[in-house]
Image (cartoon, rainbow, N blue to C red; front, side):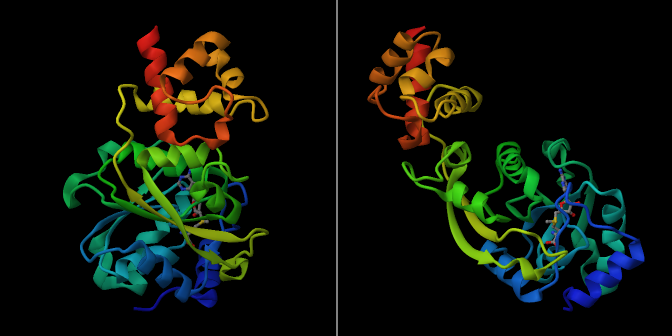
Length: 286
Ligand code: SAM
């Protein structure tokens, strides 16, 4: 199958009279090798129902269709969303029936209500818009529990954050929250030169595999509130950082002790299971 190269991407942009915007993170992949690497690392199986967020002019979409996936593509830009079926009809007509386009904001569209024709989606594969990459990733994993694995391209620094280990400089809220859903690892770096227009930043590939959340009584929202509080004052001990969330420093300290977490530690060294334990202990104590 012919995938999109620089000539085809520019021709499509010209035809559609598109001026890619930074606000929507519109940098389109113009390199077939990069697309095929993403699809390979994603482990997409023929017939698998894949969600793609932000298909743009269709570079990655065509790669997914080539691998035999059925693709639900969610695109916020109405011109790009409208043009995608035509692009697929032109470059890969035999796969037209494997594509469905949803025009809308991936942070807003009802993901639970996706047409069930192909069964529940089992993968997310996306070159995510940079400014909303973390909230989109966490939302899709939360709202589509059927998704077992994902491969996302994000800004290199964000990739580092998503896969960081406790105690490292880049460990933060996205690292801990992603642990709730499963395990993430870095599977590659991507040069700015495979995009048009060329972004100012490097990109990284993150592979995600679903795993069970921590065994706890608290809801995901409750644990996530505890994580947000834990990172709210990075230089302070967790006991002080959690004081507001728990109601007082003493209650925060009690919950930490009950969860077997030393109150003098800082939020940056705990894993999601520790936060879940603290949230549970606070609930038990209240
Ligand atoms: N997948 C294409 C590729 O690899 O060439 C384009 C990726 S481009 C980095 C990001 C795409 O996400 C753009 O097409 C942009 O219009 C779209 N986008 C931006 N914000 C979005 C949102 N909130 N929901 C859905 N799509 C969005």
